[in-house]
Image 1 (cartoon, rainbow over the protein chains, first blue to last red):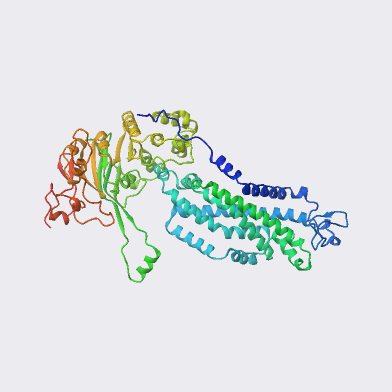
Image 2: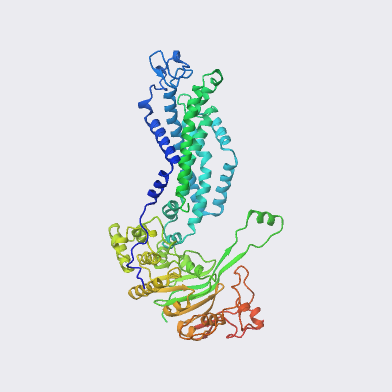
Length: 300
Length: 335
């Protein structure tokens, strides 16, 4: 008879984090995307230090330098590697600062939507009944409309601004997290360790946030990495349509919008370079997020 | 017999099927269908004396686990009352209710699902002590160590996670978790059925050890008759949400009074008796959604009489300390 009291733990202690990181590194595409994403984030973080010009400082701009082609030199001797726009703003600097705004909006709004959606899903799963039914009908309602429509209506009524765009994106995105979180929590809630917690008379709020939340949030967090990209896309769309961030703090979307009118007159760089930056950002985020989702799938 | 430590009176638990939106619309249109009601536990009276081991036996789906969850306060009964130390549990509030919840502890069937996978062993075992502030913070570590030592787990494992343990070890963690709050009544819901046979014996011995040491009382739910005969003072046989027979283990196993008990006991494999044939119980457990009228066992019973199809026999005393619910022992009242 084997004595299980003496037998040691049967599973080696390989942390999941390490396994996932290893799987991520082993893919050339993923590695490339991860490096690109890292570089873009770094550029955004360091923008004030490395940008040749402060695009927000109107005094530093000269209208004489307007619409210079890439590589041309301006009046003050500054070389415009990616050209300049109609205000004489250096496109490279504008893109670096725009990257900053886009990433900031994407991250904060995703975080906000996560907090709202996860709480809502957890509450719906825990209490069930009428609360659950009501919340899920609200979620259905939100998901039933195209997100751009909801955001447009909201922003048209409260005006533009970075904070308002974030609010709009949170409003559009929380519902998908709520639905996902509810489904995961419903499965988890049926397990015996939750019954054990009830048996110990632990407070409901404690059971929800200490037992249920950490055990059911995994899939939601993974989906949220892909959602950062869609938040950035939504922000860019809103800014392009003129209801997003203010002109004084242009994001990539607004830069594209600014360049749009010059596209047909041959000054392609004003719209195309911010567009390329946006594509690079979204693509790298999507590839990394998607890969992360697949690596975290235990059965894969 | 001393006053019962624990008592169930007419306890029932019905689960109502959820009406879907479509059904509700049909109901509005006048095509009302009564929602399906699953009678998991259907009127159970049971007393447990201090210090005894009561074995509760029945087929899968007969309501054993639901009964265990009602006893521990995890589920509230649909009807009937639960008494602990003579006090109705439903009326307990605040501190009194917590006291009952902690004194009546549950040991779960599945050691893989009953421990929070994201908590370390020390946290799992000490959680209730810390959250309810039953002990000062600095004394909790000591209490956790005592509980772990008591169930035979190496203290070196206290900072590991549940997935790093075998099934038997996890069940020990579950027992340590219960013992940490100093219970006096353990409700064990098939605590060894998920374990290897060799490990089962060790865990059963552990149950008996801690019982002797702390004077614990057990309600031991199982479908393993051999095991129940080995450890129980009294045994209750459950069928389709009801108790059909209850009495001292020795006499029930020697001379079962209910045909269902007799069929179960006859099916126990035995090396000594060297049975030539094996007669399984005929038929399936009827659906608790639509229990048969009269005696719920009559469709499978060899002794079924016409009265059995119409009148449901109540649990009645047939000998001192023994009761059975069968018309063979109590002549049915003619309606």
